[in-house]
Figure (cartoon, rainbow, N blue to C red):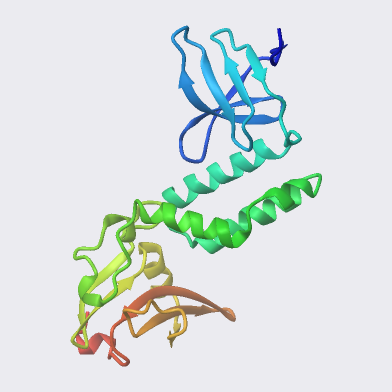
Length: 245
């Protein structure tokens, strides 16, 4: 009687979660996606890279059918873990995705004992684009004008990573809505210094605002930014006597 024989391997199955939250089977260096559950409580799996199949049973044993047409990937689990960690990080944190991704890649490069992991990782550009899409699912859409900016601002943009108040002012300056950010500690630091330094920048300013205006505390040759103002106009008198804030 002809036909493919089943190879029974006495190695227990390991189950992981994919970057999309799907349950997957890891076995002997190969990763499988669940195709269906059978009536006898076994599960039918298909290799994520090719059409090789496997069946897992309730006792964690696995029967592999068909030969794989590719070698087992020793870095697959590490890459999956890196991608899952990055996904969780961009969903929980508000830091720039460029920085989060680059830090993760630098860490992987330092810790990896071989070049296989770095070679197998998706390109930085692809990873950044993927994570941008993930973040947009849980964040408000980027406004195209000041009028589209939600009022009041969502709480996630009004507090520091330590849940301290960060939004100092949200209102009209020079006839245009502007935002001023500073934490309590920033204000204390500023109040304790005799010399302040202020400057406006246009290059890093969000497109719906005209400029970012910064107020620094200057001490012992060091300048520390304490107040961050997103302004909708070019010039505003922020002096205490003016009563703008």
